[in-house]
Amino acid sequence: MEDPVISVKLKPLADFLVLPNLIELSAVRPEEIALEIVGQGYKFIKAPALTTDYWTKLCYVLGNKDGVVFDPVIQPRISTRLPEGHRFEAMIGKTV
Image (cartoon, rainbow, N blue to C red; front, side):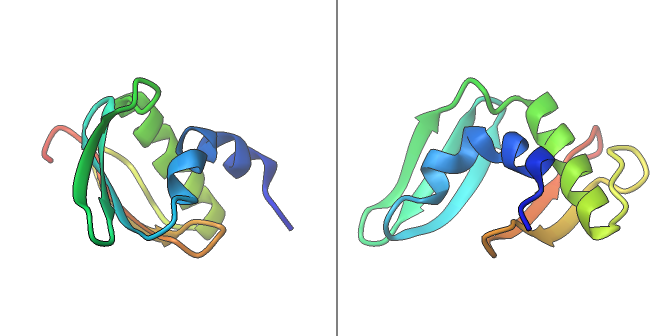
C-alpha cells in the first residue's frame, strides 16, 4: 500500500528516479543534484525544489516510515529504502 505522505514528498525526485540507466542520484549542494547515467558519467542539474529544508523533511518522513531515528543534531545520518526499492542514504546537519 502506497503511503500518500511519502508519495507527495518524493514528487520533486520522481522524474529523476525513472530515468533509464540511472545509477545514482546525489545531492551535491542545496538546489543541485548529480545524476550518474550508464555510459554518460555524471550530469549536474539545477533543481530549485531540492533545498536543504526539502532533504531534511524527506529524511524525517522516511525515518518515521521505517522507525529509524533521524535528527540533524543528534542523529544526522539515515539509511533506508524508498518505496520502489531505491537505496536512500543521507547526512544532514551542521556537523556534516
